[in-house]
Image (cartoon, rainbow, N blue to C red; front, side):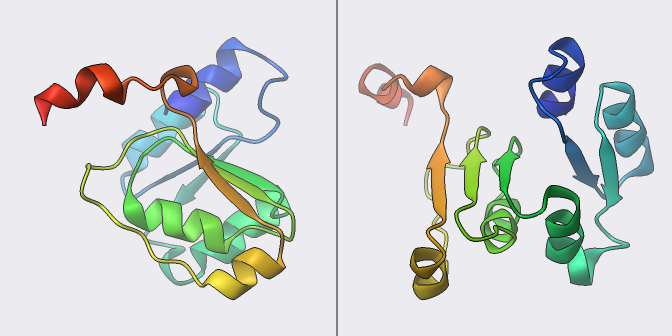
Length: 128
């Protein structure tokens, strides 16, 4: 939803904004907020990666959910030299797994974008 809202408020920032959800009302809201594409996650469960790859050309993807399954699928969906970015933060203890060779061989990249790339953890880890 955050990416859809950003796209609507800042035309030209995002050419493609894809909302994936299991609930029709959330997909409708995402479209109202500016999503250019909506995908029913249940309907495309077995080929979600391929569906996203077709829409984006595999060039890149930004995840605003922080959900591990979304992050892993986003990375798998990348084309050679594609970039995946996570904006939403998963729980602190979550670990992900990727196939290393295709990732390296494809010159793909994955990074985060957290609070403007500030190192806020130095001041905020006290809440752990």
